[in-house]
Amino acid sequence: MSIDGRPPAPLMSNPRADRVRDVAKLAGRPARLKTGRFVAEGPQAVREALLSHRVDVESGGAGVVLEVFATQTCLDRLPELADLAGDVSLRLATDEVIGAMATTISPQGIVAVCRIQDYDLDEVLASGARLIAVLCEVRDPGNAGTILRAADSAGADAVVLTASSVDIHNPKAVRSTAGSLFHLPVVTGVEFDFLMSAFRAHGLTVLAADGYGSVDLDRLQDESALRCLAPQQAGPDDGASAASADPAQPRLENSTAWLFGNEAQGLSEGQLADADYRVAVPVYGRAESLNVGTAATVCLYASARAQNR
Amino acid sequence: MSIDGRPPAPLMSNPRADRVRDVAKLAGRPARLKTGRFVAEGPQAVREALLSHRVDVESGGAGVVLEVFATQTCLDRLPELADLAGDVSLRLATDEVIGAMATTISPQGIVAVCRIQDYDLDEVLASGARLIAVLCEVRDPGNAGTILRAADSAGADAVVLTASSVDIHNPKAVRSTAGSLFHLPVVTGVEFDFLMSAFRAHGLTVLAADGYGSVDLDRLQDESALRCLAPQQAGPDDGASAASADPAQPRLENSTAWLFGNEAQGLSEGQLADADYRVAVPVYGRAESLNVGTAATVCLYASARAQNR
Image (cartoon, rainbow over all chains, first blue to last red):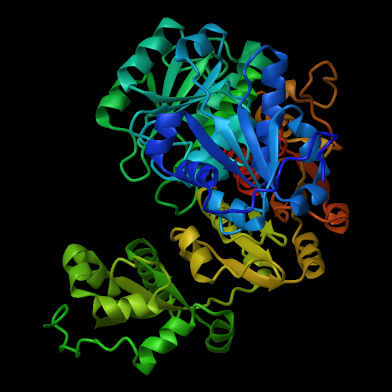
């Protein structure tokens, strides 16, 4: 048995082997902190990890994937994954071994051990970031994943998780990002005050997504549309128009960092006070408030639309 | 022990009692179909069910809640739930009984048995519906819940699930709607062809959310904004403007039914062909495609914004 002409390596068949246990341990935070590694499970996540790895290596980086373990059945079904692996170590293993490495009931025959990328916030900002999503104490892995995917779709330059947010490298969070974790820089463990200083230093407007905010997101969108599409309508003297330019309102087309808060408490008073503006997504129906993932999707897409018009 | 001055009823303490088993059985589809009932678990869902019940009863309806079971601890912590229950049967039960009735590991001491509301699509449409979300073979309870919550926030008039979509009354789906299930009419089990005829008969524009669609949602939003905010810019003769009015494009401010497809396959060719337009939510980043919940959020909010401007 050989993969892509490489010399065959013995099939890993002992789910209790040290090497298997070391991978399984990465489901826990202590092992991830100690080793700087995490696990991506299943074909979709592994594919995105390998694609990202290739881009990174081609631009001189170390790459994100350290090793891949897969069943023959999985590789027979998805041969492109073996091609994508390229020079990355790819070991064949039994279903039992993959099952012991993974946390999902059905890992679909493939896992990758990945390097936790160490992105520097200042570097990300210095490279001209225009749209950043900040998760402030967002605790639910599913919500974190939804926001990260929305940020990826909206073309955000980075996602930042404050120190007390969910660990985005835990298996459930990795899974919920559906590969987007490998698409854009994710900066973790940042203290809020440091973050605000960095945003200010790089000229980003900081918008807090806040159901009680006095600034209405729809108005910002209308003003931004008018400025671009009908500039003569958006002049500061046109007081008659409901959507006339207001210097006291943020401009969505400017470089922006959005703050999204905890599921139960939202953003703290201190965080709200530190933001430049508190922006509310309007609720048109009977919903009491918006789920943080839904709110983030609407906010990030509003910025993306204004910045890409 | 008495609740709100009612005569005390004996504490339910036997998790194997027939009455408890009957409630537990509602976690399965056959029992729900047979009885026309389902279970809402936890304080948030029960609160929204009771609020909806009150509104319905006050307007002459039968109400959605049939009975509530709760622990004394839960009622001590959230006394407003007992107040809200009003004339609805409220029985005290032990943690074991509530645990046996519920599917969640931690049902937080309260469940409500609810009536599956039988909404008629024609009635909903005849009452002047302007925004409808249709789930076409959406299978994941979490995605269905996200779309239902987004529809609720966007002020949609109804949500429709086609016959082969997830059962929105299964416990996981009910939970994922976070109470929105009780906020707007949800029409289930409808055949696609019947749906299209009904939409046509009531003059709704049918938009298919489709990553490969030729109509760009952002352009529709810009055109709609211009028509309302700067009508002289949006005239059909203004060919110079990128966002000039195009009669071949749908108008977001018109009454609209949005179609959202299956997680893996999207909408079928037949469904796409039946829609009036295929509309794509732009992807600005590296994400391959949008999660159906994210796409639905962006589409429904785009319509809400245009219709409420």
